[in-house]
Image (cartoon, rainbow, N blue to C red; front, side, top):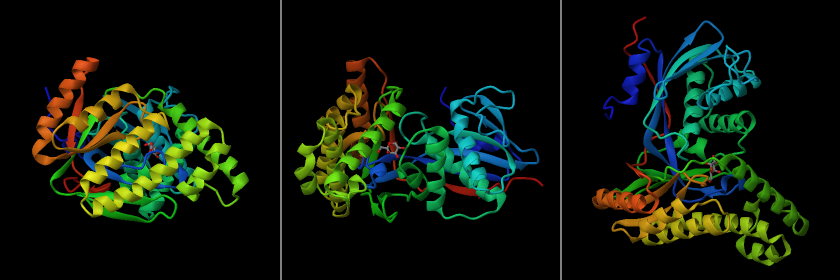
Length: 396
Ligand code: GLA
């Protein structure tokens, strides 16, 4: 039976004496994939699928967290975060590494940190490439900030969560996900420059919905392949720097300049770099198209972006390719592409409101016919970023 109780109510009923409620959204990226760690520009959107956290401080130096949807609980000592084990010396379950990572990075930077008890529930699909990990990180960072009474700018919180992910989890991710989770604006896409950290919200036309299609394909190789792509980008930069010492990242090189040098570098590395350099250019064009309400052009750019991820960056898979090509044949769809790191996970589709139901039904049916897998679709809108609420019902 499908639960009709909202995740907010679930966490509150589990921890009625919580001091604080925290909620953080997932994100999709409209365009600008695998460019944030190359200092490029991206265009993510926070979505109305969110994780919720009810939380209170406790006197013991522990993180006592239960994940309601998974029916799992864990107790982690704040004094033993390096070991990645619970208080009974069992390895931490994957989901709990994220709150531990935030506590670890805060401790490393000497922020005061009290123990907490927390309950998590969510309607954001986990491990689907919709940034559930960044949502958990950012929610815990806001919880710690509020309960311990120190202040920090949102961009700095995003960077702190990124460091936690890089150094504790071991994924060399860029800043896009944590940025989007913390800066989301309802009804707007976020044009974000990962070099200057400047950003601008761009309205999404009211008649368009974001349809997310979850391929159900597990992203097992994602972590190692993701780190490998990063490594390849670093290698290209050091090769290109031999010809032009001003090149410190792939952001520093324009498309005409890249075309001059591309034959001088290893062909595989040249393919990777071409994706990044062209994708940055596409994001800039996409921002202009969205501002001008030119959805046809935006759709073309999204499609070109997907093809580049498939052919040059090689992070797609047959399931995602099928979903994207099928989407473009369906009424009401203006743009479709894989979203997030790839290797499975989800596609994002920009679909006219009046056509979303038929779009979802047809996409689900075609996918089932082809792969014998149930496709899950979610009709979403751009939503606000993470925020906190005092628990008004708490009885002192
Ligand atoms: C993951 C990372 C992001 C970004 C995308 C690919 O979501 O966390 O930083 O690199 O992949 O665009």
